[in-house]
Image 1 (tube, helix red, strand yellow):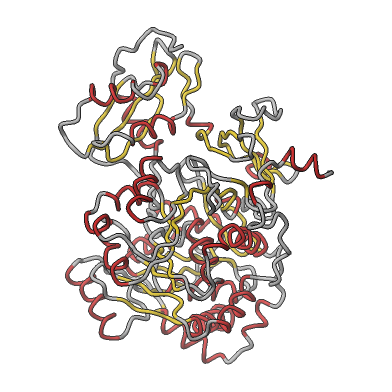
Image 2: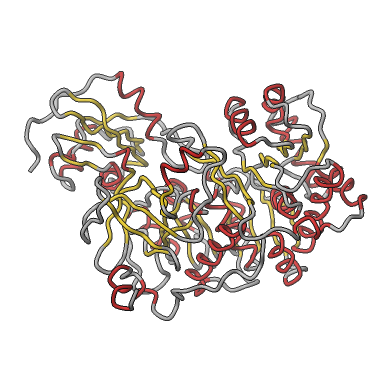
Length: 583
């Protein structure tokens, strides 16, 4: 392809300028385990991770400590438990010091990590553990009673390692935190599991005196590193197979896009999103680990007041979050009155960022809140807004280096510039497939291209904007209505905390728009909401009715679950709708 053809098919390259390279060198390390060793030597004495509790109590580990402990855990897995290379190990932990030790230990052992949401029900745990064939589980003590119900259903699991939120805290502080959680808050249930506690597992590993580096010597970019389950919000969860190469490439892509705002060895990143989610795993954990950052881990960001001590006690330079998290912070006086003064930038993803939230956050903090787009199957970063003066707000930015995007109609033809189409992508970060799901893999991977199921538009400069999930589109009188656009309009109302929009059956229009709203002020009426919408939206996009709720169903990351609103909405009678065409 000549230069003119390249510029025509990839107009976003012009936006890179001299700040972002269009071509990246192949990552030098063969595996994440090899990279971790290099990083640990470079930043050995610096603090790598600090877990901060809501009351400010904390514990920290240096890069050297994480390196040594993860070596010990790798030896425990291979020499004590006798696991083989490629065996799967489930990690069911909240953000805390145990997570990086365990995760890196699994990778150094040449095994495969299976990220598992600690809040899963026993049914969800059993599906994921049986599907992935895990042989060992590392779980936090808060949820050990659920695992007790699951083990009889998963005979492949031979070993359970138990840890606690305050693991590796100073002895007195950790003891106080654990005692309060167990005896005062009643958060640690009794169980009858046979377990090895994490510190004991590390001691057993150290006693083996083996060459830990040999376990990962055969790894390369094609070696499987992570099974990251996805699809739980839309159907039965599937394990996306992410290789060492997928993750190393995505790290390189993300580092290239943020290079102007990331200084090695000097960043302090707030990690409120859970590390078992792919966004925080790659961006907060892997990228910032490579950069030698100090990672401030918050075990539970709900309620949002749990973040206050982290902001007050540490010079946060970076943070990531979803729209609901940023919106919640902006409704806290302690945050708006004393915003983080060292913040260089914040990243938003996981769901569409609302214009009103971005604008207010930037006004309060003076730092850019840049939006990106990704999905589990792409490790996850696909697009990101560039951190420069030309950054285009209200978009997902431009593709990461060495990522190709195209927008196709229902017949598979490329759409015109500015027209909506389903987004397909190709790049080194795209997964190998779904674990033991050849039919599901074939449905989304074709000739190296990944079908996302998202509808997007691209402007003449190569900036992309997600319109909505294809499956969430509402058809009103033959017109396509995208929930994101209506949710954006609703969020601009000063008395609305958050909102979700779904389609419901309607005898006259086929489908009608239902707005589910959480109010900041109970005096807000349905009529006022509809009047606000009429000032911003054309007639066919207007909600047929408004339903008020105290809260919206969300994933652990904070993404609103539209699908959980549908059953209740289907039982409610539809209000009369206009017979106008909306043109």
